Image (tube, rainbow, N blue to C red; front, side, top):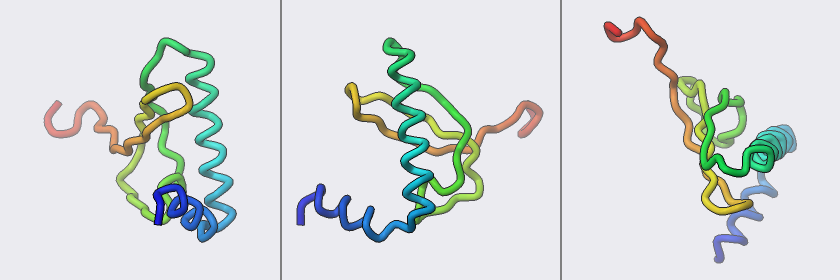
Length: 87
């Protein structure tokens, strides 16, 4: 089975609520890079549901990186605030 077919199968199995969340965050990320063409990455607040079917309550932010125009990757992380861990 091709990677493209696997993506289609996964999208078909995704509940509509999560499809809408993913569509919104993807559109927002695309808009950011269109408005900031020289940027190659940015950090934004994590949107619950954007990692469906996986969930990590520790996630607070998403790092979005532009690979090529129209292709992006997202990494999820927990922001450590000042004062934690003795800082």
